[in-house]
Image 1 (tube, one colour):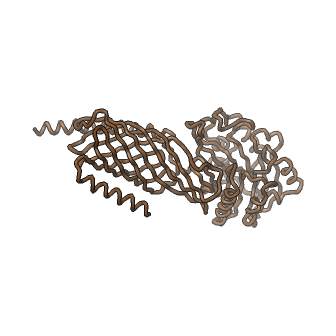
Image 2: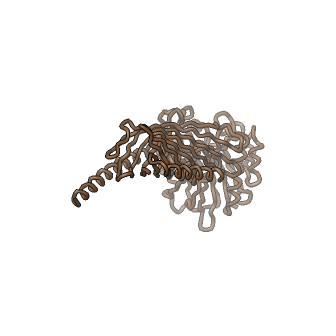
Length: 172
Length: 318
């Protein structure tokens, strides 16, 4: 619970800072990943040919179908710089993290999931300052697990990761 | 001016529609891609399409058999080789028919496993034996060597009597691809009598603590049951070498192996129920509802069907 409050405080502060600068934007994405489906409110900054954005993940993990909260950060590279009147394609690298636990009797498995993906997407300006964004990515994930019981199962597990996002951004 | 705006909005909406259709197609195509498997999914189901009006005489013959996905004894179901064909499943069905069994618990039963010829193995064997069936996943299959060969590894219960309820609780969890369940079927023998049959396959390579945890979960499951109950399974715990674990069932269960005739028992202990000579497959009953009349392994000529041998007992309902 302490971590959730910390994430919310950091995120709220970022939004407050972003409102003071006109090269910032806020947005909300729907994110479908290999291990869960999330809403992703975010704050981003436009740099020269890149955008950086940070947000929280609030949603449901596929691991136990229970609600969880996590973090997501993205770096976008726009080969065509900032075009505001048409499609603008971008490359995107994303990292996300969330945690969950499953108990069977007294045996508990805690799983910390880190996922890194690289992908491609586009922005499309709907009206002034408001744009639609979608991207897909592929990469890998690592599940770092903690058990409160003795097991020969590996503590870390690597796997394939996929990511699909759809959302809107509003330029401040 | 107004017409310009209408055309502008119409063009925007058409473009948006195309984008949404493309995104939807991308999402749907990825949904079928194994990397978006829903980890929490617990697959279990039952069908009553077998014998109707089977009359319960008071006696039950019940078996447990690990069928190894319908692969031959020396074949490897996880190597990517094709198996689980009609011929092999027919041998299993013929064996069940020849023994005239009322209830059969099967372990390592494949469902939608990409490398097996028969995709729903429980249903196929049930049809060939004219029995009702229940199926529950043990774990999803996706090994590192065969990332795109997917399916389910599970347990099945075949019954000549009607299956009225089914659960598939988890008894061990590491992740979606490394977990174990206990298939728990309620079976109606007649209007007055229902019994609960549990079927589990304990994880191979379990540590001592994992074995204790799984045994504890089974004991907890039957504590919640009001009806007479029977527990069957491939426990991957050797009767001879790991009796301390087996004895942890004895607060809730009788071990049929200890209630059968001494000669029958010695035969089973001498041969084992697994090809390496270990007794790993068990049938337990609750302590008050059944008496055990006999117990034995299937005839020797059937021992090449799988790497386990079918073990069956005749019970009388008290």
